[in-house]
Figure 1 (cartoon, rainbow over the protein chains, first blue to last red):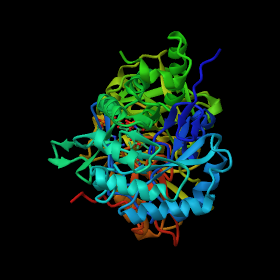
Figure 2: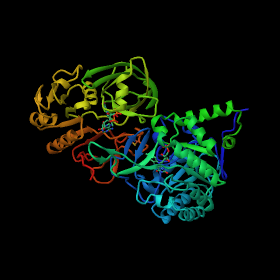
Figure 3: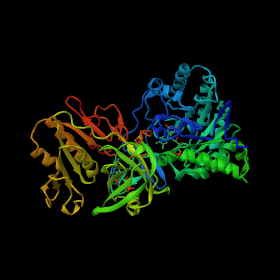
Figure 4: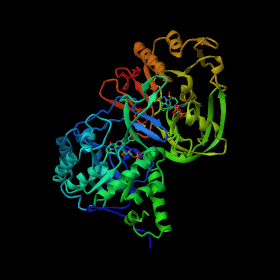
Length: 314
Length: 260
Ligand SMILES: Cc1cc2nc3c(=O)[nH]c(=O)nc-3n(C[C@H](O)[C@H](O)[C@H](O)COP(=O)(O)OP(=O)(O)OC[C@H]3O[C@@H](n4cnc5c(N)ncnc54)[C@H](O)[C@@H]3O)c2cc1C
Ligand SMILES: Cc1cc2nc3c(=O)[nH]c(=O)nc-3n(C[C@H](O)[C@H](O)[C@H](O)COP(=O)(O)O)c2cc1C
Ligand code: FES
């Protein structure tokens, strides 16, 4: 019998545990020629805000040891252009799509969600397990804009309030994306759970800085940025370990996944699913390789369901 | 566009610190055009991490091989320089939007600065007629390549050819008229070419450089400032070549602005 790769998050069933992370996969079309969309467990879109955002000044990216430091600044066309220009293609993709939402205020997050809900209709397109917009990932963790949510994401009371007000306007899967830039990620995860989230995902990028010594200038126009890639893998694994022990809802793990071993670390640490971000930039076959490797590992270890891996850490 | 394992056919030094890479090309990926680029993962290790973009400098007649001329600058190009013929390399391409053909009656003037040479050479080979103006630091930096007959070389110190920059040669020697000015090179050169084209009411098609993460338009990392102030364009997928025509200014701002 072949292993069961599906993942349950609240009411939602994802076909497999390997998704592609917000901000690293555009709106899907950019990678369509290189990545088989039908093999993705979920596609998380670039963050959508109420108004269009041009993004931060340039340069926005610099490579650091085994890492990528970025300060994109939530560049996105805004919810209206998203609905007219991006949504039709997203609805036609053969994989579940989760819309990443960001805002400067609670009202802004709420308005984005309400606007998308009004367009989609209340039900998760009749077949909650199939393709279509199946949920939202609430970005309360972007380090790159003054009002990118990080102010929310570091305060449990605000996370709970924001989550419960978003919960009130959607029945779709609601995932709160956590920042590692906090002292106690468990308390933030508990706040999201208390607010009614179906899952939490972690981690977003870590605040980092790189300096050009010759020029004596910061390498990024915004001075600091968000660190991603293999350099942050152990931080992410530890965050998932802590968050998954703090809450009963599923935890989705990400940060630095480049291959199946990395993803299996997250699953063993307590994650129910994973996302690949920077790993797709480096090699667009990463999500497929990760999925295949998880399957082989399950077979070699006689594990029947992905969900069982969580309990296997010695 | 396709990701595939290319075979390194040759990887030879062509000038101090410069090499020419010849790769097998998977025709299923599509035929590269001058100004387009490919991204290479030079090593399976995580440091250096990101793929690196390189412009095509040519293609074999049967389309089965492509080339790029590169400068050894940092970790990725140092690793690339050591790769031996016969080894495989992870390639994605062709990427980006290349140079448009000259319009009816337009005289093609091509300018390259330093390692910007590759895409401009490819363009020259694809055009029936053009004036090619190449800029180098000094005579010893001139590459051992089959440069088209009649091309103009410029050196900063006058040790070979015209003393000065390609933009200066063009400004002195190209009469006003219907011209499309093509160029690739360092940012100050692009700014000079854009300024010259605007002054003479020439059309221009210039290739920009910016740090890239994905190379396919997904990450918004390779942003370039728009000339109308309304945000940014992506070097990798809106460009890297951006054109200005009569009555239509360049969509990107070519003036290098220092971060404050
Ligand atoms: C569309 C495009 C086409 C290119 N075509 C060529 C080509 O044909 N031949 C060639 O030699 N190089 C080309 N480059 C630049 C090439 O990608 C870099 O030289 C290479 O990535 C350097 O990698 P590295 O690890 O060796 O050095 P790094 O340590 O990454 O860089 C060394 C130095 O090079 C400069 N640099 C590196 N990458 C960039 C960049 N993307 N934009 C601006 N400055 C940069 C910086 O000053 C940096 O400090 C191109 C870049 C782009 C965006
Ligand atoms: C270029 C870039 C853009 C990103 N944009 C977003 C975003 O819009 N919303 C979000 O929640 N996370 C964003 N992230 C964070 C990633 O989704 C992910 O949490 C982080 O990069 C860690 O995973 P990785 O190491 O696999 O990339 C972005 C990351 C990168 C590198
Ligand atoms: S490099 Fe990612 S959008 Fe251009």
